[in-house]
Image (cartoon, rainbow, N blue to C red; front, side, top):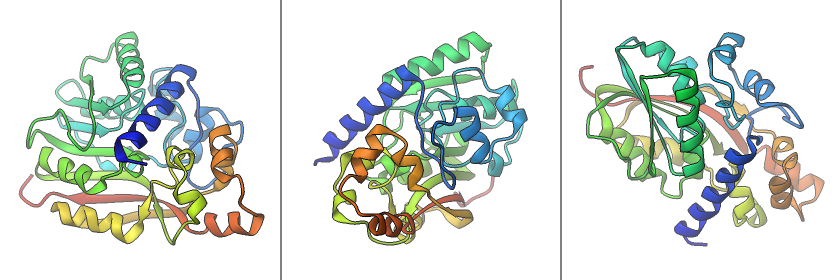
Length: 274
């Protein structure tokens, strides 16, 4: 399937998620029928963060908490790649304060509409949401201090382009903090070629070394994996689309696949003086 077709399927799927306000993509525990609040706790968000975020912004879509590693400072400009309904954007907005600014970019119109509605309903004036693809960001050169992303770059066919764009929009000394899914080994063809698995954050994932190499190739320095944990296929199997992705695999195959997938949290810097 061509990249444009994959993007269309991903956009359609996440548009449906925005309309139905639910999904499951967690890093190390089974989501099952857990609510977004419970999923967020399992992947690293605090009670305080969950209370701060506007109702309806947390859809349970992440695989970690990039905000926890970002050391966000008051007055900074933060960009969220694949911002969804705005959950991480609103948490960042609390930290940058009224002198700071947060920009969320998402290619799914329904997500952007939901995020904008959440911002208006909760009175956030330092957050804006833009429709766009993260391989071609609608953001000016060297205009942000921090780029964050949460379980999104694995969905992008051209990950190097995504990191190139993140590098372009960062100021010198700026930082990139991502939570994402990577591979520790080859996946069976049935999974690797499945679009259903792609939108479940599995078959679109890159090998860990390749993922980190794409960051360095874009120009990032001091690339460091801050945390790594196994990714549980129970979370994929709890979703109807995810079950379709796993059809045809025997139990021993599933166990082998699960050991080849990990959730990582990575921080990197654009060289120069902040």
